[in-house]
Length: 220
Image (cartoon, rainbow, N blue to C red; front, top):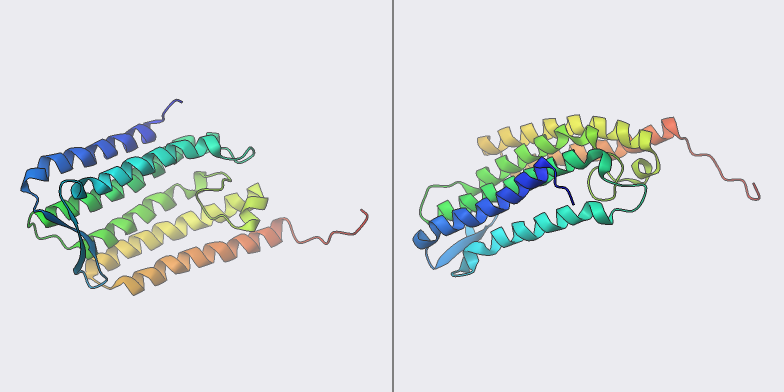
């Protein structure tokens, strides 16, 4: 299987997670923060020797799954037409996990890291990056606005994702700004939820305009 540049970069990011962990391992305490609650307080820990490598292992497993998905996609919903974009999306998701993992390790060794703002801002950037490529996705069962109406029509899929791409870029950038301003998770969820809801409703509206809803006549 030939790998695209984005997929190769995704694998490099996985390797980088293991390298960063190995470089900081000797400075890490026996108990590593692994989860923060909505107030930004640590409420769960992992332990050496395996704890620091859990997230890199998760990244490796996710990278493998993302590499396999194109091969198992049903006929008629193949990835070939957007395989390059798929690689970029893989890299973007794994880059987010690498950033989160690095922040966790830095926090564990005593660096002043605001995990809540950092994670929320990073997710906002991820949404902006993903949204920028929505218009290049073709119909598939794994990524995008997958409603009955987009999956039923290539034109509905295209129009919906052109709109959704713009909405998610704006929502991602808004989430990034709100995160840095400390606006709180609820306001960010509203912004992202609105982008998702408008995209779903738009897919129905586009389908009505393009395909309509023709009644099936028995016997014809």
